[in-house]
Length: 370
Image (cartoon, rainbow, N blue to C red; front, side, top):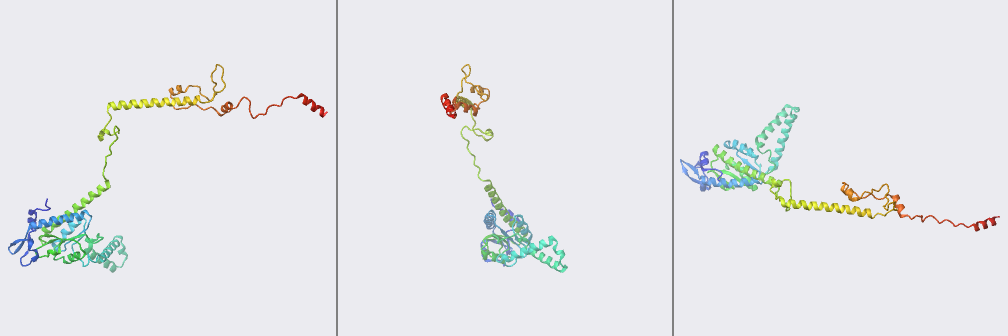
């Protein structure tokens, strides 16, 4: 879809050139004819130039580039400031200062000075100065604002410039070409097209023509900025990968997500497997507890032939305790006193045997002493 129609260009007067006696022969390939002593610009060439410029400027906007709008003639001042401000681009609509591109470091120093003067006025520091000194600083600030207010936020040399009337802004075009900065410009019948990289043949003296083309340029930058914003959002969000669930898996949001669910037969089979597993686990736990109890050493038998139990040992069978809800609890181990009693024999090995009675020795000893 073309960025503009032939009817829009005709209504804006883009096709009107200069008088036949004021023309540049290099513009001959863009002229359709002559009427009443005025050259008529070929609008087909204008549409082609607009399309090429639109693609280039959209690419600059996509790369977050900076385009400087330049138009200091009276017919272009208002539209240049309006369209450049709409897309956040710098502009020059009062006077082009020599070296604004080729000597940008000096210009940047003046921008810092402008910020200092604004801070002084905002903080009220000028009120503490002499009246003459304060008036001098205010005049300096007004002059800097008049010439540099449009580029106050420009931190570096622009990626491209858009010019209205290259003949009047020839210094800006020269500086841009010297630095290799692409030039997009409205070129009238009295201008040199060889100085411009992206030529838009058209009337640069009519307010409506300048407004229409400047709006198209701003729209191209805006579209590029929007594409850059979309790309940034896509990088932040990252690619979305949907992980495939394992066969037969179940999640609470299966119905909402459309994931496969278990059928009734599969659910019944899964329930039977879980029941069998639980029963086997209970039996293994009970058997382990019984084995542990039977492995304990037996004490002396009580009356009736049953194993005597101590006060700390629960004589209830393990199987009954499991059924009563005490599953998983092992039989209480015997106390340390009981273990010591069971391990030691009836007679303690540490005790020495009693000496046999020897009445004769006793008598002998008695006699000896006697």
